[in-house]
Image 1 (tube, helix red, strand yellow):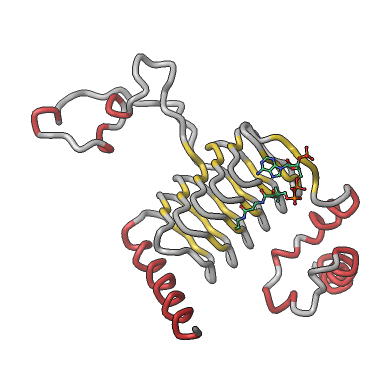
Image 2 (cartoon, rainbow, N blue to C red):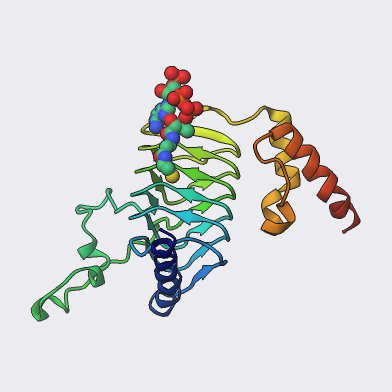
Length: 220
Ligand SMILES: CC(C)(COP(=O)(O)OP(=O)(O)OC[C@H]1O[C@@H](n2cnc3c(N)ncnc32)[C@H](O)[C@@H]1OP(=O)(O)O)[C@@H](O)C(=O)NCCC(=O)NCCS
């Protein structure tokens, strides 16, 4: 059992390094767990302790915070094709995506100028299985994206959103707790600095975090 897990981890770690050679501008703040089946496009940042499940795709120009979790088959930062043009096909604006025989290579293309790329996912965000997040969307710290939904608008911190299009179902905590969490920003600390915090008890954990880090913040 242990051997199997160890082999899997090695494969993931070496894939990250391998990927960096091929894709441009991928910055992974290690340690992060990114299986081989996850596809990362260019210009992507991923924060430490983020954990991706199989087959997720992260589109270009996307910034993902720390302690982010994704379910399987998520699509983060999907771009629109130009639906106001006569054709939405990318062959008319980016023929590099297409496999073209020689006689079509001189076909001229017209740039798609206002295509929105990338989205911003905060820290400690949990993205449920098979969810899609549109390019341009900002997801606040601590938010939850329910399984199987399409996020088309920004999501406030600690909101739980679900459905197609995604709407706010509720918030994880009350306003007072959310504002304390956003002040303490526990994800800025090293994992070992968080050791001993009672993460299963929000009230106690907040008091412990405030005692441990608030004085330090004031003195900075
Ligand atoms: C969003 C989620 C966390 C809510 O969990 P919960 O608090 O136990 O939610 P409940 O089942 O009590 O549902 C609360 C409400 O949200 C709605 N809801 C729950 N999941 C939803 C979804 N995926 N899409 C749309 N609405 C959803 C419920 O219908 C319910 O609505 P109502 O109050 O009008 O009846 C959970 O449903 C979910 O989607 N989890 C993702 C699981 C996953 O993908 N895991 C992968 C592992 S990484």
